[in-house]
Image (cartoon, rainbow, N blue to C red):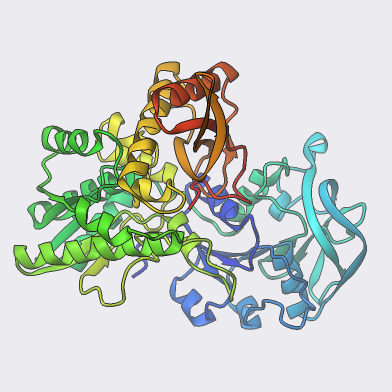
Length: 516
């Protein structure tokens, strides 16, 4: 069911910035979805897209097994914008020529606008901001019949092209990245000037359409909600409760992988500030038994996912005829858990890739199409308090994926104590709300140290703090040296079994935010 009055479909050809395209489109209050290029044209058309964007990609369109698309898409009278590979594919599919460039273009470039309408409407005098970001080794050499040039650069005679009669257009550069200074204006022109979008996708409209869809799907049936106390599950519960009220029962499972005091504070929060029915399940012994001896991160995630589902189904039987399970799956979870055209899955998320095929409960995932920052806005729209909405993300598998190697009671104890110190120092310094995430990781190694003039051979804690908007990309946080020093000093002095603290200065990509 298409519950959005206007929708942009982004066809993904494997670009590292495809998710950025979606972010930029949504910033203009236009709803969009990403679909792999392998999606059949009939499926795309069922969405009744207001417009289509073809992403970039790492391949060359003339490669033997290059990603392609049904050329009939260009005859559907739907506005289409091709970006980099997407533009080249459009040109090749319609009879043009794309070849390896004599001079590749990577990084900053400048364009000369030849057509002051369409994508470039209102930009003809923006001489100081015509900087764009190129990333290609091929270029368009010959345009198909009906196409003409809209902009050129030093090494790309067809840096932007358009069809003179149809709403088909392409750019060789990437308007979605910040280095393209007119990128937002170009996308705005495509969305509103060409696709005639109204920009009516707000959190208020999302609540209305989603509540209606949940009511229609559930009817008079009962729903269980997996409640962790994190932002995602809290917003999921609030949204579904708004839709079906007492038909919702929440289950909080203590899997033994929570932070110090987390279970008690979460249950107190739910009891005092919400009207949700919450069942508390203590499953610490079960999960630690299942995870004994497991070191592979994918197996960890899947065992934790299987364990949650097993418990949910057992509770569903006790409660009677429960048909649905709700959980707070987000768009980044879905994207990371799905391989594109044979590519490697980045990692299984316990609530996406970790679910067993034998699960008998049907899933309801109302946040599946949202990014993290959008979930926070939704939480505020639903009236959740700031303390629930602005918590830093905490993974569903808990500390299980912040312990590298085997999970044991002793290792959990070490990590919990280190984690408390990290959070205390981040909050007291005022930095907790400035970063996306800040946490400790227990490494599977020991190092030599000196304490009290004696040799030690003990564990290593890694400090991971990142800045991000939506978890799709992230950069390591530039914390003050004195704050890093206090965290390190306290962990080494207060946590028995640790003699070294290291700082993770990796960005995403190439790393992920969590270590497993």
